[in-house]
Amino acid sequence: MTTGLAPNAPSVQALPEGVREGNENLVRLTAAAGRKVAALIAREQQGGWLRIAISGGGCNGLSYKLKFAPEPRRGDIVVRSAGIDVLVDGKTALYLKGTEVDYSDRLIAGGFKFANPNAKASCSCGESFSV
Image (cartoon, rainbow, N blue to C red; front, side, top):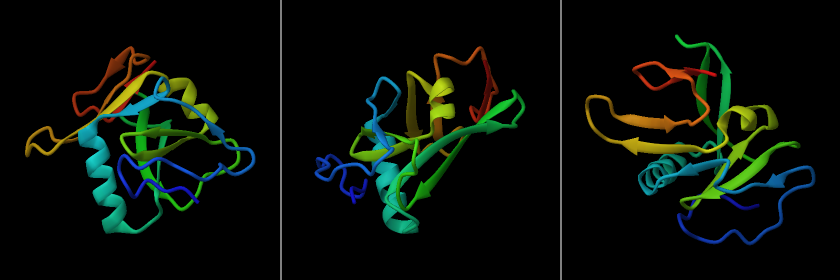
């Protein structure tokens, strides 16, 4: 199975049935975000795939969720970006299209940041938005 463990390494295995391949027009990780995710995957050992999801909650109504997954699920879209295999479900894809994920290691206002062109409003922490 393809994993995001080796940044910038080409994926060589086919995706499971029911899983589609997307591209960076859906979501794109910057090089800094890719390096941080690769380090976290190696440290956490919870799966070699990064799942990005959007759920209800947060101060603006919708919030981003990041977690590691051992494999894609039926209906997922896989985007290979910055050497990482990113999983996005079909519902999340509607809200995520065109989003760039960056990472900053600054002590204040650091962490993962989402630049989502679909968001009409975002909170100051950058973890929730509205459409």
